[in-house]
Length: 296
Image (tube, rainbow, N blue to C red):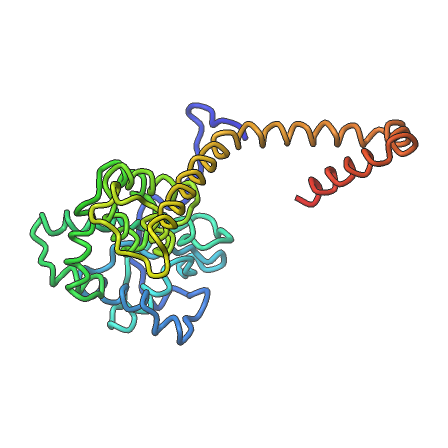
């Protein structure tokens, strides 16, 4: 890919100006299913539009034969909600190319901690909790719970999880730990890419009482010695996993280079004949390696 030359024109993905387009002139690329019309997402978008209007404009592209007609690339729910509200026009972004993907898949969704900070900022600016609840189509108790979500969480753990989609109940489990254990647990979740509540509970169960805000309740059927053994095994597993993670990059690079070298060897007919005659076991293993690489 060539770097753009200074002063050369670079094609834009959208027209310079957004347009206010009659909804009747926009042709959707798909029909919303009955399930989509009853979904939580549809209800949230409808509530948000009713409370604060359109935040993210729909994306359209001009029809090649009729430039005053448009095809809808992204925003089918928004357009349907507006039409049912009796709106006749909508401000849209006009794309210059009809990409073969939905724009929604290229959007970074709001992470749990980012949503918490957004709610705090809105409340600080004087937005009533009731209005936030209506805009997000949730119960006001949910807004109050999210407002206090990070109470008891240390800054380092928050920073590790700030861009991750972490269930609210998972954060509740992390709050049971002291700061150092929170950081360890958050780091493990990020490395494993696993943020489920059950995983968080297992980390809490494997934590010694000294690393918890409140001592754990006794687990039925397990003695104190058995619980201590589980904690030691969990700590050993954590250390071994981190050691493997540390060496993984270098090991993977060595493996790629080795397989590349073996593939070059196997492309030489004379070498293959020699291996087949004198070292059939090695030839068999080399063949497996190159076959796996081609399959990958």
